[in-house]
Image (cartoon, rainbow, N blue to C red; front, side, top):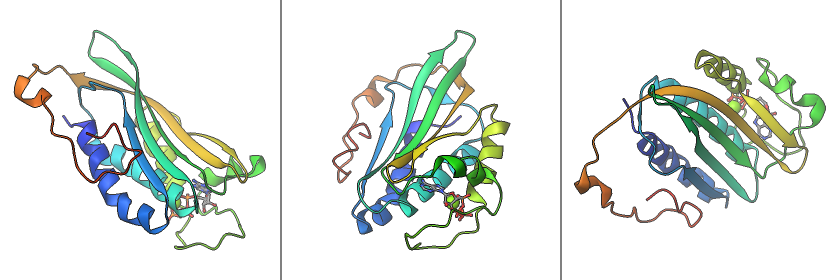
Length: 182
Ligand code: ATP
Ligand code: MG
């Protein structure tokens, strides 16, 4: 099992320096009381990592937000979650929106890239999300920003509430937008 809050914290901390460098507000948002999840934490993390990496790369002002929202919990131990990464970056025009998921496809843009990349991130991410039984979706408007999201169902494990753990110590030095990461 793995702790999604822990995973989000690690992602947040690993991207914070780059976001700060670019003057972007980075924030993470989680539904409250998410259970311990079962599944491939490494692959899930890779997908979100790719999406945040892109979001920061293609955004020069504003924010990058990533979130996980609980949609539904069934009593046979399955939780349905929606993950999303949104940015206020350069956006992707409607006619390019299906292309960006193809391998080696990069949209030509006037915005100078900090790092070139190879055009594989989204193709890999889409396949990984499929392996989780979901579909990676994109909503974007050229010049306005993008939202990449997917819904997946994962088994969760019910843990006994540990009273010592419920009194959580706030994490210091998080960005102001990251209210949920405490
Ligand atoms: P790699 O991920 O292999 O390092 P890459 O980031 O260029 O390279 P993808 O992640 O597959 O490749 O993205 C493909 C293309 O889609 C990008 O080159 C860019 O043109 C566009 N794109 C992806 N994410 C965003 C985003 N958040 N905002 C604007 N354009 C994006
Ligand atoms: Mg990429």
